[in-house]
Image 1 (cartoon, one colour):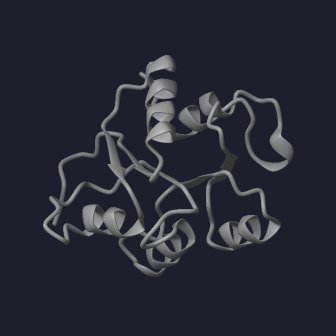
Image 2: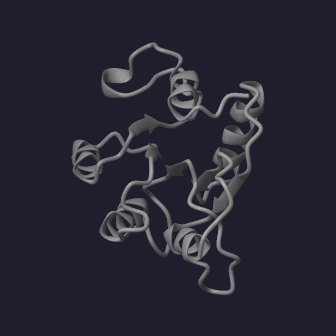
Image 3: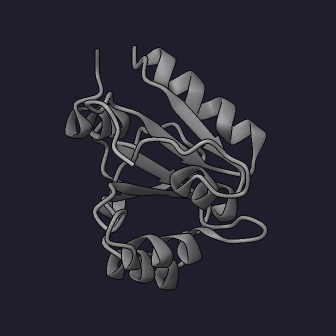
Length: 147
């Protein structure tokens, strides 16, 4: 299935409604007006990406914001499936999680994530060691999503 020239989009894979609202607020605050698709777990995200389970297929997103701890299929399980699929192996994936476990970070690194953001999502810190760069602006600049 081919899509028209891609408009930047974000796929947020998150099961916590407060975290979803937090991301929406941060996007508005940073004047990012792009479609935001929300999936509540890895299975729903796959359904959206592949057009399965009665879902309308979405175009491959510019970025996936992926929580790790979710029911049905967690973030690392989804990431393994995406990296094994030639159609989705190059997706920009940012992990957004409350987990600061070194094992989670290492596994995410092995699966070629673009970034690892510890929640709560204020996007004030970013990447290794929680640097004080405005992480969300950096994230948006990298993806050229700013309007």
